[in-house]
Image (cartoon, rainbow, N blue to C red):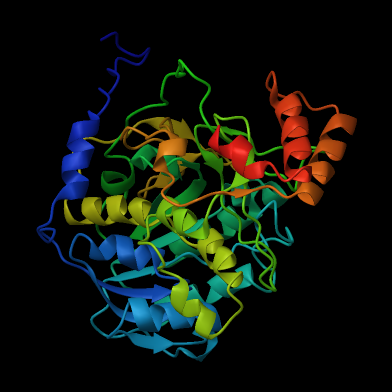
Length: 417
């Protein structure tokens, strides 16, 4: 291997088999952690961490639908509904975890910044850490926080952790890295009092995958609610599952199937795309309308990503990125960075810790798809044809053919062909 200009040698890519071995171990990790989960949602972080032996002593979640899921699916845990009512963390807490609300940070949300009514709740994390400096803090959020208000939210976050005496690292991770056909990129942030957080987040590097070629066009996901300025296009994957509206109006993506038809995935497959068991969110129907389950799934942390972090927390790596570009005041936040006491640095690392093979999307789906309705198809086609967007060859023709088919009641035929 050729060295870098400064004499360093490029780090070899991790073989996917190494990561799969790490993620499929059934034995508890060497270091079993006690976890307090804030903004727990439907338990994505906690489910992933539990797969390698870490246990939750507290879950905090305010949404009635998500609470119903936690009570049924993650029983025997202390539940607190409002983080504002939580005075302190349990004494035995070793890891504080949370996917704090992203509504004010997401491009699909209000973009009010980290001090918005929802995302501003992250301040309660610092309030609780003032009372008890737990050894580790794991957070998850949308990558848009690195850009919103010129990265003010991320600057606030790391400044507070530095003030509290924590080292930190973060990395944008793509859920496809773990063999799930969902293009979902999220910031995974780890702060630590003693552990070098790079030994967790940077220990695995598969590198960006090479462009694949297919004998037959794969299923391609997109958002039928778009079509004017964007599409959310994803080859052999669906685009990021969204939370939908606050009142439970679902926002599932559409899929251009290899057969030529346009379909929406079943909710149970959406749960699987987030790393959950089928019908994981079914208990939410006790508190909310059934369609609200889409919101819960879209807002969740991918359990497989948390599984990887949990495995590395138990077995930190000894080969990780230690060289980087210094981040000066006003610099743009990169997709990975750290501060372990000597300043802030950007890490040259991909969004792919692993390279677990991704199954064909059409084969991954286990449940019947639903044809995109004539109204939805016509609306998308109208927006798309008036836009200046470029579309893959044959796509708009396929949408038009689907519109004719569903309008004539032939949707089952075109999806099965």
